[in-house]
Image (tube, rainbow, N blue to C red):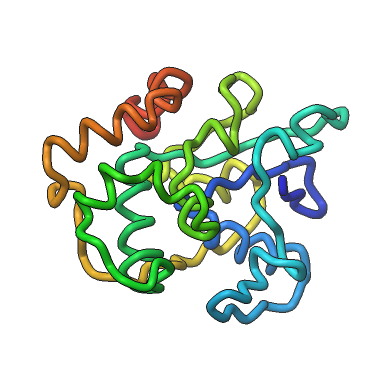
Length: 202
C-alpha cells in the first residue's frame, strides 16, 4: 500500500527490490511504530502489522489524491531488480526450493507467475507504479536514496535491508538472458526509461 509519513504530506509508493524494506523500516520508525521483527514467510514489515505492497490497480491512492499530498517513489533498472530478486529470494531464501542457474531463471521468468513470493518480486515496475511518471511529485533512482531525508525535510534514518545473498552481478547474465529480460520488462523501459537512465542527481 502507499505509505503516509505521519506529520507530513508525503506518501511513499513502494516497489519490491527498490529499497522497499529499507524505506518501510525507516517509515515505521518515523511513524512511531515499534520496530517489527521479520521472519521468513511472516514478514511483519510488509505484512498485517506493517505496510503491504499493492499492485497499482488495487491502490486507492492511485485514484484518490488528497489535497496537498506529495507522492514519491524509488526506481531502478529492471534487470538490476531482477538480479537482486534472484540473489535474495531464489538463492538466499530459496523461495523455489531448488536454485536454478540465473540465466535459466531469466529466460523462464514468465513460468513463475504462480510462485507468489517470486512473482511479487520480479513483476514489472508498471504493475506497482503505473505508466505515468508525472503522477509522482518526485521519482528517485536507487542511487539517490540518500537524498530522501532532505527532500522530506525530516531526520529519516534509512537502513540497508535485504542485502543477504551471494554477490551475483548483472555481468553474470548471458546476452540471451539480458535480451529476454529487456523484452519482459519492455513496458517499464517505455514508461520509465527517461528517468531510469538519467544521471543521478540530475
